[in-house]
Amino acid sequence: MELLKKLNKLKKLKVALLSCLLVIVVSGCATKASYEVTNKGMCLIFPPIYGHEDDTDGTLDQLEVYMDLYTYFCKEGGTNGSR
Image 1 (cartoon, rainbow, N blue to C red):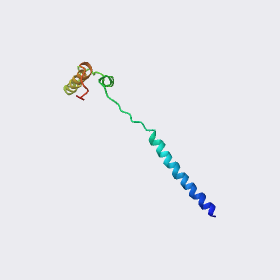
Image 2 (cartoon, helix red, strand yellow):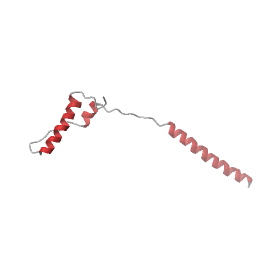
Image 3 (cartoon, helix red, strand yellow):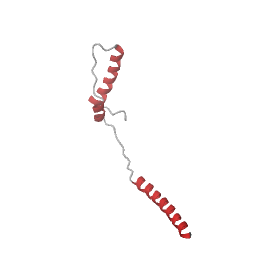
Image 4 (cartoon, rainbow, N blue to C red):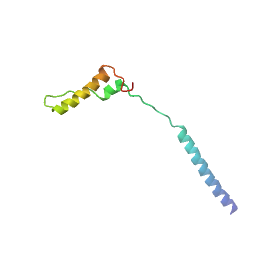
């Protein structure tokens, strides 16, 4: 009977130690990644948009704003807003 109690305590200790070891291993493998958005990347994601004669005035106004930003960042080498 005494042996069974000791084995149960040992099992509980094993589980606790394995849990701690798992936490240490998993957290130790994490890497920190950082990404930088560049103008080149922006120009690949956001291509130029061309209007059509059937577009409404509101759509053409929005298109003009978009193309001004596109020209600034992609054609004139803007700073990506991080001056």
